[in-house]
Image (cartoon, rainbow, N blue to C red; front, side, top):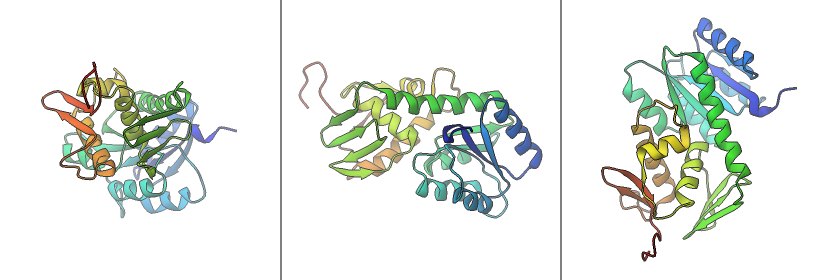
Length: 238
């Protein structure tokens, strides 16, 4: 029997697209749960577990954005990939703002989608296999075994992508990471997504961990370059 990590939920109202995705995912070793509406997907998730959800933005009734929000509230560790129409930049940004980890623009090669899914699964596996079981920094704590994040001993729910970003920043406090560094480190060098993806995820993390997101205590913007975790580097004072 295939494990939960290989189970993918596909929510797409166009049956031809849904079946096409299911066939390709099955061929790549994934077990697929198919739904044609957000309402149907929520009912199914009460009975079934999945590691990945692929959500079309344009769904009848509850749209993909609302579905993303509802799934994220009850499944913080699920990988969510949104399917958006070509040229709909606001759809991409809104999906990320609402908790999606990634997006694909229609039409797309299903092999690229599968590559994206596998990249996210590898990211989770690498985090769990790290030699560091716990990373702590000035009131922030990453439990790599449990995939849990704590701010001043209070647990904060992060998405898999947000968790990976915090791990990247916390393993080298004070180092300035460019947006390209972060894209390559989290999504892989083969990723061709919008660099704004990084900014949206950083904004979401700040909203969760900073007391004042507009004046961040931990994640500092390096203007015109990227981000760094405020800290000590090259004997500089914190």
